[in-house]
Length: 151
Image (cartoon, rainbow, N blue to C red):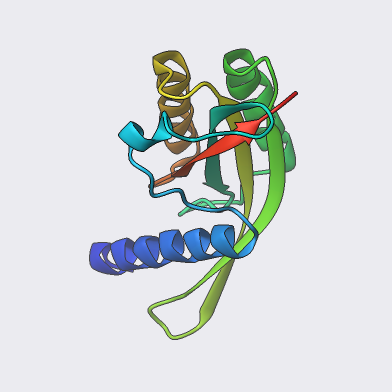
């Protein structure tokens, strides 16, 4: 597979994962940062919800194992988000260049954190970078929304 086909496949994969996220009930919030202060919550406070999508297939080699995934969560995610997190098992699919539907197991990681918090943002970007480097991934999709949260 040449580089152009790999890039096209990657782009289609991201679109498929985004569609899957929207269909599973995740909403993309198009509000600007200026409007976030105007959000009124009947219960709780406005907070950021970040969902990251991690593919489990390597471009060359075996799929990422459950043990490898859990080690990543234990060693990289948990120390950065000790207050809590949620992991969902997911299945992405997209139309390949050969006209066949390609499927890939994935994990979605949902994090709730303060709005516009630089520490959280830095930690999220570190996670994306570490995962891509460790598991030879081209991308880790990030979706941001604002939610009313009460504990």
